[in-house]
Image 1 (cartoon, protein in one colour):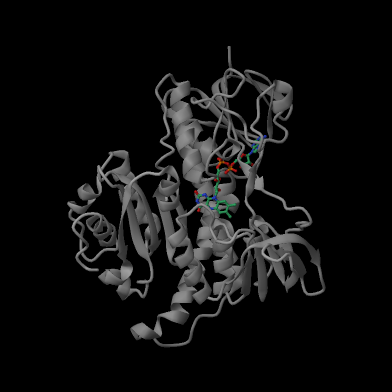
Image 2 (spheres, protein in one colour):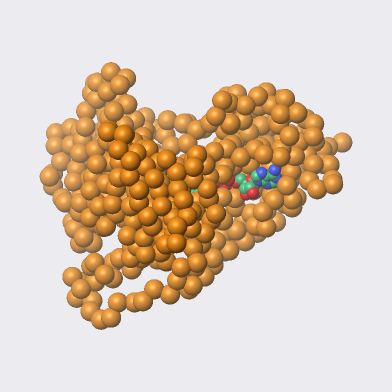
Length: 462
Ligand SMILES: Cc1cc2nc3c(=O)[nH]c(=O)nc-3n(C[C@H](O)[C@H](O)[C@H](O)COP(=O)(O)OP(=O)(O)OC[C@H]3O[C@@H](n4cnc5c(N)ncnc54)[C@H](O)[C@@H]3O)c2cc1C
């Protein structure tokens, strides 16, 4: 007799969602988590604490930039870093405790400790071995390293250290212009730090629509972030002040150095599977360290599944959650499925950046005939009222059929706006379907409709 129908290893968004869904589907479920709290990277040292700091510092930015314009006068608030950190901790605590509550509500057993898989059908936690009919690996990821850069989480930090610095630095070098680097760079720039982002490629946010990336860089530069692009970091060294970063410009191989109080290494994340015993178990791995899975999330070992950051695909909490639900359904004998063509990506800076589906660059590379409907937030009354009219919505549709192929938004509320396009894409909608849908006025979402109108006979307010 198995102790459990399913044991999920890892209590992040992939693992905890999977465990809850398994329990809801009538399976006796346990989730192994080695941290003190549930919620994984996302709730503890990722999405949630970073959004708390982005929220707090966004308000600060508003006070300095826009309050007087609206007739809101008076002394600007002073930053109490310890209280801001306490606010962040409260947000994290409320959310992680929430998952604990959901486990109890759904009768998921939390096996506290680090798990390993000594044999198929067995999970070892501490000295105890538990039997399970199915095992799900949801062990997530950890910050990637860079040769020559030694992280101490005080002066040379990863995102984990950057979320909990002892004091606000006067200057910061961010290595890597991806989502995490730019979000954390924004936080400290708004807190008064001089932030320089050093990026290997010639553009920021690799993979997002080129036009959006260009606008985004300009708008961040307006907020004070400096960019050194096309720069290969050679290494970093502690100094009296903080640390210096040595880099070579790729265009001419010239060598440069930059010094700052704090260096944030934000060159991405790598899958974390240490200590699981996968090699001995004979689980096949991908060349880049992810657990190899088939179309049903099953590894090369029968009854052992894997999801989330530990497998191939975008390292996003909602992708992990979707896989968690889907694998639960597969294990329960249903038809779990994830549509990887409609996974939105969001950057929670101001302005926000959001995208789903194909970029223009991808469509060009595929040789697909497409049309572009673009609408600037300058024509959106609500965006103008909050001084965020700089961005735009760009909708891409098939030239012949008008079917929506992708959407890229830079502007207010982009991270929420993108979802009407996601739903439309899931239903195979055309740009005209969106254009014919009444949108409330005055809302930012009118800009999405206008972009859809621009795919047809034209936007009204542009
Ligand atoms: C600073 C930052 C900001 C981010 N912001 C966003 C965002 O805004 N939106 C977004 O979608 N994504 C964001 N991400 C990415 C997101 O956090 C991850 O994609 C997501 O957490 C992956 O979920 P997961 O369940 O696969 O793994 P994780 O969240 O990494 O969880 C894995 C868990 O497994 C546990 N574990 C590992 N090995 C074992 C073991 N052997 N035994 C027991 N437990 C184990 C770990 O302790 C961990 O708690 C951010 C990441 C960072 C670092």
